[in-house]
Image 1 (cartoon, rainbow over the protein chains, first blue to last red):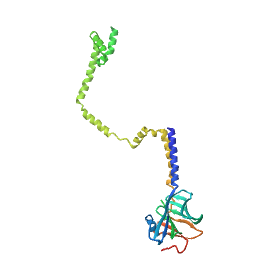
Image 2: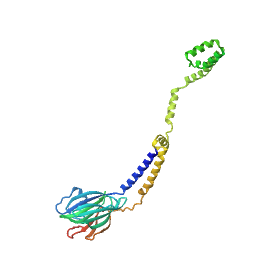
Image 3: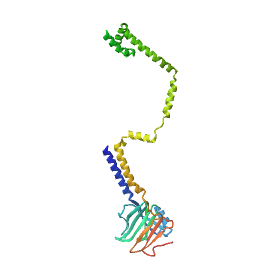
Image 4: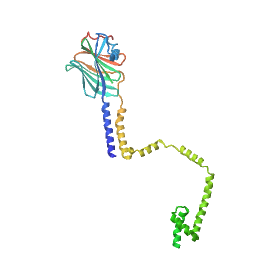
Length: 145
Length: 170
């Protein structure tokens, strides 16, 4: 009986630790989009992005290039290739309740072309745009799940 | 003879209660006609029985047993239900998992859990209300502009790779 009790306590403590580990992680959705004025097609999954950015930019076409959900752990950079020669590096700096502080780097051929730190909250997005992509412009939309 | 009387007198009570064997009955019934003392003992027993039996039979005749039973049933139904704590205690008594050897470590484990989890649950939040905020932004190569969208649901960081490529309405 004592052995069972010890196992019970061990399992409880283990589950406690695993819970805290899971709590320290943040799931972030990364969408890479090509926005352009060529054509007028908007991917159905990008209606929300068009709705948001439509007030700011007059792109007529939004094409989804990549939709990826990454699980961020504190201080562990995750790299997402976004374009030949370019990559996005996302690192969770800290997490406080529903806000995650994330460092975002865009690299071109190994060199940082953008280094920023943003706070991500559920339901809100941070978009990074501007780099040229084909006939359009590259947009990277980050949102916390 | 005396010895025989002594043996029979020991059997008289059983004989009276009709609990003797056939042999014992034969022995007693063979002895009784010759022994006034044993007969008298037997008669005494009969008198005592009659003395007790009559009032009991009278009481049985006068007593209303269905009514008594109804009363008992009502009392059982009205018997106070055990409190929640009593129910819990009785449940603990019948649940081997919560016997003392397990209960104490379990309580300790729960205490540890509460101790560790409480700061997480009641940690003062320094969450930032409002939209996602850009802490800082830097680029060695390009000019950068930060836009806050009108609906406050988004923030845009824009890199100016070429001044002619970005079209802004705002």
